[in-house]
Length: 150
Image (cartoon, one colour):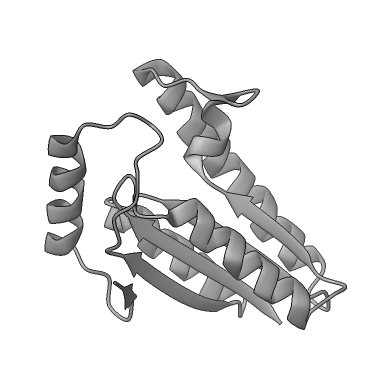
């Protein structure tokens, strides 16, 4: 079983926690599996501190993109291995999401897409106005077949 899970949601929607839950479930079902958790925010951490700037964010996006390419290559090389790729980002760029889906389908990797509409305390100090804007933008840009979590 090889699977790509895409988790979309505004800041503070619980994407990281949801991704961690999906990883735990996958590992229970497939104990000898390999997983790749790819999230821009993971590349913005310095120790336990989240440090955001526009330049660091652009660098994090590039690192995440490269990590995704590496994950797909790993799965392609190890087709018999149970493997999970989970990408948990805001996910406003639909073209980027469709590229991920296309690559997964090309490699016969199962795809699941989740859209989180939940609200939790925002640990990255993103303003309520920006969070609302992200939420509204995602509502305007649905992905066909995505499962809504409220």
